[in-house]
Every structure is written in C-alpha cells, then in structure tokens.
Image (cartoon, rainbow, N blue to C red; front, side, top):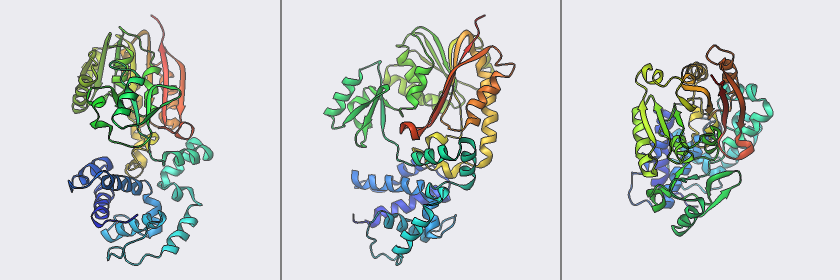
Length: 405
C-alpha cells in the first residue's frame, strides 16, 4: 500500500480536531472528507477508517510513540508512523515522518501488549472501574470485542417491505447482505458500502440500526392499537421500530428534551411511513404529568455512559470523565422515578441502556423497585447483552410490569 500525502495530512488534521479540540469523531470525519471533491471511495475509506482506528488505539500508539497530550503536529505524525509500521506499510521519505525506528516500535508493541490498559487502549480509571464492576475475565473479553470495528446492520422497515424483498433490492443495487439468526428484521452488510444512496433507503425500506438495539422494541411487547410512550426517543431509531411492531395502529408518543432530535425523528417517520408517531418536546414537567397513568407501554432508553457502544464511538473512551458515571446515575434514577408514572395499572415498562455496567443497569432497577415510586412494579425479566458474546453492541434491558388496579 502506498501512502498519499494529501490523505495522510487529512488524517492528521482529523486527529488534531478530535484529540486536541475535543470534537466528535463522526462530525470531524464528515468535515475532513469535504476537503477534496476528487477523492474517490477508496481515498475516503482510507481517511475514515484510519482516523477511527487511530482514535480507537490512541493510548497504545501514543505510548509507543512516547508522546503526551495535547499532541503537537509532529507528535501526531509520530503516532501515524506507529500505525503504519504496525500495519506493515512502508513509510515514505517525507520530512514529517523523520527516520522511524521500526524495530523499536514493534518491540515496544510486543511489550505493551502484555498489559490490558495499553493493549486495549483504555484510560486507567475506565480499566479499573470496569474490571471491578464486571470481573477481570469478562472485562478482558468485553473490551477486546468492543475494540473491533462495528459491522453495518440494517433493520427492515416492515411497514413497507419484507426482509427478503429488501435483500433482493439491495442485491440489485450491488449491496450484498445476509440474515442474522435470532434477529428477525436484521440484515448484515457483507462489505461496508454507502447504503444511504440506494433507492431502498430513499423509499424508507430500512434503517441502519445495530442488532442489539433491535432487541429493545420487541422486549416491550407492544400490540397494535395500544398507547405507547417512548420517553427518551432522540432521533427515533427505537420509536420507528415500535411503530412497525404496532403496524401503525394506536398512538405512539415520542418524547425528548431535545427538539432538534425530534425534528429528525419526524423526517425519518415520514420516509418510513410511520403515521402513528406524535412528537412532544419535554419543556417542563407538565408534559410528563399530563401522561400519568395513561400508557399501556413505556420505553425508557436512558442516557448512559455508552460503554456498550465503543465499537462505533471509540472517541467516547477519551471523552468520558470518571465523574460522569456518578452524575448520569442520578439522572437515570430520576428518569425512572418520574417517567414510570406514565405506565397505567397493568401496563409494562422497559428500562434500557447501551451500557455494560451493573451500576447503570440492574442496580438502578433494584433501587427503583425498592422505592416508593417502584412499589407497584415487578421485574419480569432482564438481559445483559455483551459484545464478546454476540459480536454486536453491549446493551441492557429490563421488563417491568405494573400491578393491575
């Protein structure tokens, strides 16, 4: 593989935005890919994948390159040289890539690979916290799985088509997919490709949604004609799945504190032909109070550390701060206490997170059940979904039922 100067410089620019200016990796990659309209799919792929890979292995590469944050431009080039050497790519004779001690890099890599926090490239505090919470053996396996590149998974929009029809349409567009056992609406891309330019996407035949995330809506056990409330809907991946499971019958209320996310949900719902979705921005407690005791089903897809989705958000390893867990646990419990009141007697509630930490998951559920607000609820079942067991994102979901009146 031959390295091209303009592509390598684009990667170094991207790393500077992400590491030194705290910008989000996905937004940065989008921005940097606009530098040159002449770049083809292979060039763009190199920039995006190399940037993500270097974000993922930041600690390991910085340690081998013997550089510390904030990283100067020469330091970022040193880290890039480490990446290239470990990939077996011949380094060009550029002044930015001063003579690189290749043998030393490989030797240091072998040495650091014996220590988990370097090998899997995580901050000390995260390594200690997760090992303590999950146990050494599970955390070692889980962080290894979370460092693998996420696959592209689609969810068939059953309001408009079937999985077989979708697979055929994508095949005709040159996109090869396969079914995944145990995930009824999911298709896995055999090779990464831009699915957003296909007619199938424009016609609302599918959404891109990780396989683990596709387990949450069915867990809520919705039926056509019910009143269902998605309390932390965001841009609506799970809302749209609920709409499909409800066959567009009944009322589906999507709530969020961010109006701009709900705007995006409206746009997606229109494309997907989901007509039973109504969005409401939570501007005050009144919005929630109006819904007390009225819903057959309530989904709380709670804000969390996101430690289960490091595959697709590797920069979260460096953006998360140790005190964030304490703050978000307070928020999670508050949301459970408040939003659970929307469930009517005999109704059901799902509490879900994309975290793997018991503190955010079963411990929050137990705390809720032991409180005044949770005394009428019973835990029916719960599931911890680990990347090391499924190959998909880490998730948690608990199904609770409220006693009949």
